[in-house]
Length: 317
Length: 317
Image (cartoon, rainbow over all chains, first blue to last red; front, side, top):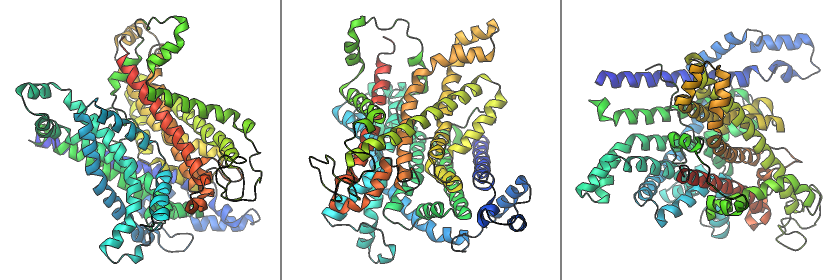
């Protein structure tokens, strides 16, 4: 049985790597092959054919697509993403300075959002059909549909403009104390939490409801177990897998959400780096950021999968 | 283990937001034995029967914005780009009901003109995504294992690029134009539509009447068109609404970053961006477009949620 679980984990790992490989192919196709001739673009329409050919050779564009892809992939695997076109710094260095900031933001957001979401999701499942459940349903349904920039603008309007409690922009260099840290992170984290909490709560509720409908729960209720005990002792251990999945799925939403939030609050993270790179059409930097984003996303999904496998005693034994 | 049809563990936001299992969806969509015997004159009654108050609000909001998208420019008090006032970031008033923007243009007219981009683009992209996704989903379900395997792997790879990140990469490579925006929004949401339609079709394929059709010797295209497709239309329509919401959020997010619809044209996301300077004054110019987006997406969410709930409770009736 244990061997079975190990095989399952190995299969998941393999699948994740295969997906990452396919992702890299898609990204390379979009950024490297389809847009046409980078050499021609760099030199403009007036360039002589000889100059274009020379530059093309210098870029390695005269080689077959597959060969270019394999070379690009080899570089990425060894951590060499090339140099940024706009400031000639190595892409890996730029990413290394920004990535920790984004991770802190993501970590704080998860720390705040997961407990709140689980609380909302589990309690609305326990009181299914009640006024509380219905109110929470409409609230979460609406929050899911609101664009992040609306939440962010309203937050800025209230907390920075009207009340003047919090700064509208994030200057990380000014962080010297815990209080300053809270003030800087409050609004970005709040904005990200809004959507994520709603999403996660809905999925948690669905997962718990799924279990509440099963016969072992009915049995427990018939035995006279209190509702809290039913949920705490009987349902929750069985929903760890689905809830881990829900959490991972919602957190993966962060990768989209941070793009907007980092730009609004001028937060020096990976997503704002990428938006700048897109605006400047700095391809190596874009490629590097995308691959980091996708790898992080797949890692998150993989962790959720592993939680699901490990939390299943039938596979663990 | 390897023949596992598609990896259910690469999650995709949206499908899990609604606590509806796929079996239920199929049961819903199965041709109702006897449609509720409603008199022809009772259309209004049936409408009331099918919609809760919240659902009705959703329906009205969506219908309202759809109408505006078509007739907006006709009923706008001023021409789209006309400078009509010397006051910038003006407040609500008789001449300019929603105030004026950063150049002194009438905000109501800007929003009415913008509806065409926000609603129209999202509608086109969602339609494309749903049609193409359904086509490939059907194809994967009715063809052999290899076609299914290849399609599933490919779409899994695309799904692991977060939609905003995918959109950013494409825009970095090709620049931003109306066609490009529609294409990328559709491309980002084809995999989701593919997965849902595939699993729906898979469920239908296992039903007896399909086996009967097979035994009769019908070709796979006949089966796909006549037996399977009509039975997955209803859940796919609900899914279409969801994709529409996601695409509205994606496109307005891009426009908000300045990478979406380019000036002088403006969708609601660009309107928020243009007027962000008025935030500190709490100008309606920055709030109203955001409110427009929120009402559209929340309305659509309420509508779909209602359809799903009612569809379930009255499915067997």
